[in-house]
Image (cartoon, rainbow, N blue to C red):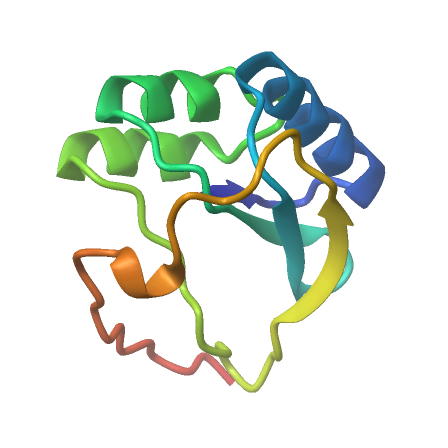
Length: 119
């Protein structure tokens, strides 16, 4: 999982492609969470925790707070529902080097986040 805030899509793709090729990851799905340049990304290649941290840390332009809080919690987390009526839309997909070896259903933890609306 990755989170990118205020990063143009071409830079997101560049950073993800670098770690994808380095670690021979499966497809990476990139979703736009907010216009113009906020993205999240998912890859369904399971990794040991230490390797997952390496992958996220080596991804250029990844949101440092996302990385920091993930390491602190011992797991990475991303929103999968809309926030403040903003829909999450697929923006791109990077074809991988192998088939995925896990599914969203395999995740061990699902948390419902309540968000205050600042309208």
